[in-house]
Length: 232
Image 1 (tube, rainbow, N blue to C red):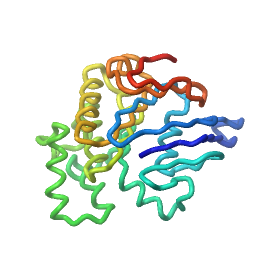
Image 2: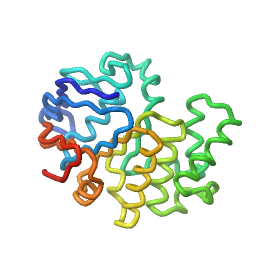
Image 3: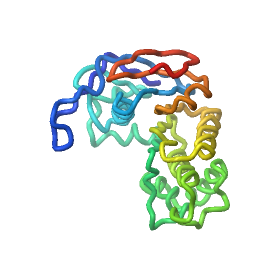
């Protein structure tokens, strides 16, 4: 489903980075449909860069990236929507629309795809039930806890039934109780058949999950274990 073949990514200097930064250096790995894979590593190890490459937000300097029969690095920007419709992405900071309700935030993901109103009214309640927020449809993000806001973000990411869910440090702003709620939810989504990539540096999560772990350090893969532990 996903394949990185000798991929390297270098960020050019800018006002935030005075020097050229090697984010990934000659990495190769594959992920099969239905897997739950943890991308582990410290901040700056290259986890987010992998996510951005998969969705075609950035291009590599070297190597090939494949997703669901697309060679992503060769797809023109105007054609990337065909790939992104098959992927859901969740971030650490939720990225919710504060002026919209929970229902409207989730519905927005379908609206931009041109889904008709009837189907939206049918699909949104289903996904809110999956994330245990079916009683919060008319609430605004400011009325929710951090854990609830992240569950809204996950609902929005999966409402279009993607083949792949990428969760980039989704528990970074959460307390331990809400952290494990989100981890359990990601496992539940994976059990539905969705491939899940969880990027995290949280040692407790990685060791508890006992899922496949691809470990990064300074842009290089330093471990790839079927039932991995935190080794960085």
